[in-house]
Image (cartoon, rainbow, N blue to C red; front, side, top):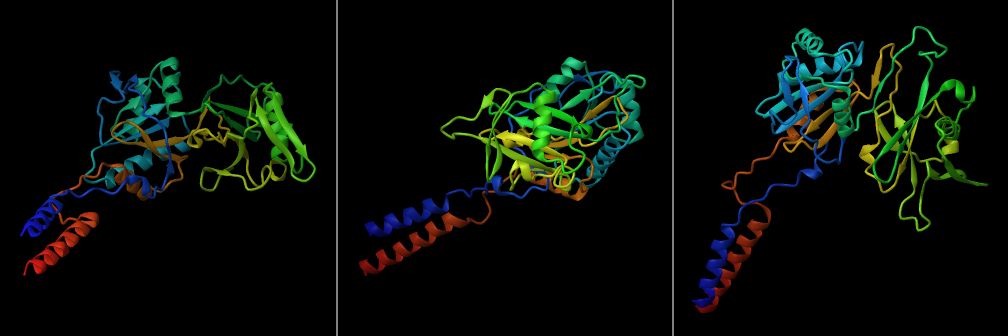
Length: 357
């Protein structure tokens, strides 16, 4: 009877073990998965001229888009997409926020007119250049504000290629090179690398192998160590899916305009999700920026980013649903490991009972 009592006790304890939820890290995301820290609670001004802190209406799922009201193409599409997303969202505690990248022109009145034109009934925020710069930096958004002269010698319609650098401490540099600075035909990634560092007065350390070509060992005074604890890795911008992809060929074999328009050199030990999105187009506006829309969790930690405006609304809705906290009902059937314990306990109880007969 002693053994029977023990087995029955184990059985009762096993039945009381609560079920556990699956870890969300294994989920498939439609957008670009991010691994970043939480965004600070910045204080800005909304379209009604009232002070608004980012965490003020903190929700289970938070969405932040970067726009500007004079944007001729990408921003209107992003805003329209978000309006469509709102119509499809169900049973989620969410909050949308749009933040300008053009504070010089986007005062509260301009943002109010913009939001009303799109029936976008959520906070549209602005602030001083200094305040917004801290927000842009927090989101790793690259914003270029240029005072365009009447007609200078710069051709604003000329194609611009970019070389992005991600350093070991996750800081970045973005170097632009006009097409005219590269060879007329068969421009390579190496041509872009040397032109970008030269025009920006950055040092470039490299070695040349007879078979494998040029290999970068140092950029802007940051050299990879001899122990190979980290090294400089080459990434290419895939314009089709708007993501950075590790190059499977050497820098001399990358053909600019054919394989990619932009390249990135990233320290292998850095957070690769911090590689900035390149400015792939030149607009006749005073502002150009990386058009990104972020989905953040309840702690304001960015989970997923959507690049540009050519993204599917239903995919965005799916990712918002995935980002929402999962509530587990412990009263439901006991799954997995607990079931195994119950079965084993029953078996032991039966064996013990037979021995006592």
